[in-house]
Structure formats: structure tokens, C-alpha cells
Length: 382
Image 1 (cartoon, rainbow, N blue to C red):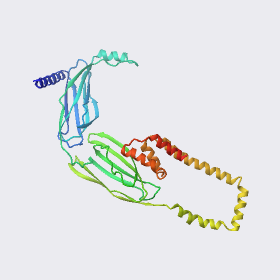
Image 2 (image 1 turned 120 degrees about the vertical axis):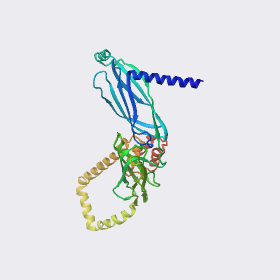
Image 3 (image 1 turned 90 degrees about the vertical axis):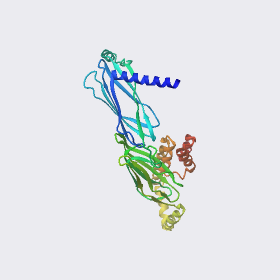
Image 4 (image 1 turned 180 degrees about the vertical axis):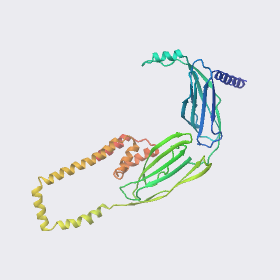
């Protein structure tokens, strides 16, 4: 009995709201698609036209939040041809996120204000003005119903996209890093969690995105985004080939985005052999009697001048190099930024423990004391 009374009350309320709205204004809610796929772009249009010409009229429309869809306002167009003849068109971009039947609901408020109220607001337009005094009428409008088609579970992208990669070199030494950039471009649903590649065993990875543009249009988001990776390792590794399954609502078909795999060759540097092979022969040449005499004469003549200047210059240059690294570390505000600084300056082998902690914070959301890690690095760089 209580449920029946509740339904009757709701029907009467909706009927009253519609009748009241019909007295004040006429409106129409529509969509360009009734059975879209999940994450397919849908254009929703709401048009309101003033019917009661007594006062000034304004329309406020707010979509209700729901996990079943994502919706953004594309435009709000006022087409009033004359006074007291308000005509407003709202255009929204909607992406359904759930398969099956979904309900897209809106809250409509009609605001009216007399000419005298608007005139008074102009007179009172100062810092403590409260604005136009309006009479607000909330209207219950019939929601939009969509029948949404499901996609294959392994579909990563919805829209028409291309994916390209750019890598400058495939051979590095153990103290260097490889930079590879993937560029995603096209129109469709903006999947902010998309990643071309994921963690590679034995590889220190830093990742960031650079959004060149991501603009909402009637066909979906027009996107160009770079996925930038810096990779370093102690031994050779492979950047895997990328195969991304996507769906084109425009063509009503699935397709796959491909990029090639890259074998990265990492060479090791034996510093002890370099010293033995390159410096020893030079030392033997220097250690002749004539060379020794010339060397000591050179020192006596220039020790107070030339050599002192060189030593000062070397010290200053070294301080400049150190201060550059320190400045970069000090500027880092997050674990992600600090990890990038260490990798970019090839310091990961000197701070292996700190890198492990930072990676744990960035990729596993583990709580470590960021300031403690940062201060340890700063002290060791000084």
C-alpha cells in the first residue's frame, strides 16, 4: 500500500512539474544515438524555449552524476531573438560506461526575474552586491534512456586512433638510459589509464605523459598524447612489441594497433682496464730522463701561476657540475620527479637503495618518508 502511494505521489509530482513547465517554457531532450557501444561518443541536446513572456527567463541544466556514464558540456547557446523570448540550447558529450540499459537524468531550473529586479541589480552592482533576485522553479524532466552494447573485455581503446613509437638508439652502456616515446593520436574516448608498455624485469623505468591536446568534440575527444619512457639496466633487455586492441564505433569493427619490439644492447665499462691500457703507455713515455727534467723545470716556473689557476678553474667547474645536480634534486617535489632526476643524471648506480624505495613509492603506492630519502641523496652529492 505504501509503495503504491509512493508511486502515485511521484507520478503526480512529475505531472505537476510538466504542466508547470509547459506554462513557463517548452523543452526537448534528445540524443543522436539510442543504442551506442560502451565508451562510444553520444551527443545529447537539450533545447528550452520561453512561453510565458511576462519576465526575463534563464535556464539552468545540470546532469546528475552516475558511474554509468561520463558527460561534459560542449556548448550553451542563447538564441533569444527579442526580450522575454529566451531560447537556450545545451549540447553535451556523453560516454556510456556500462552495458545494458542506462538512465541519464538531469536537473532543470527555470529562473525568472522582472525588469525592475534586473535594473535594481545594475544599480547595486558593487563589491557586496547579492546579484539579481530571481524566482526559481525546479522542473522534473523525463530522463534519457540508452540501450548500451557491450565490448570485448580486452578492448583498450574506443575510437579511431594511431600509435607510433620513436627511439633514437638501441645500444647504451650501463650508466646510460634509453628514451622511447609512444604517440597516440586520434578521436574517441579518452582513456587516461592507457599505457603502451608496462614494467620490464630488471629495468629501471621512469614514465610520464605529455598531452599535446585533448579537446572534447561531437565525435569524441580529439587527442594527441605522448607517453615518454626512460629505461636503464645493467644488462641487455627487450622492449616488447605493442599490440593494442581497439574498437572503431564509426566503422563498427575491431582493429589492432602495432609497434615493433626493440632489442636494447647494454655494454659494460671496465674502468680498471681502461686505466691500464690507456694511461700506462703514456706514463712510460713521460718517465724518460729528458722528460723528467722538462717536467720539473715546468713546475718550478709555473707552479705559482699557471698551475694554481688551472686548479682553481677545475675546482670551480666541479662545483658548478655538482651544484647543477644538487639543484635538480632540490627542485624535485615528488618521488616521481626525484626518480626522474636520478635516472636522467645517470646516478641510479650510486643510489641503488634510494631508487628501489622511490620505485616502490611510484609504482606500488608504498608509503616511505620522501624527505628522508631526498636528504640522504643531497648529503651524498655535496
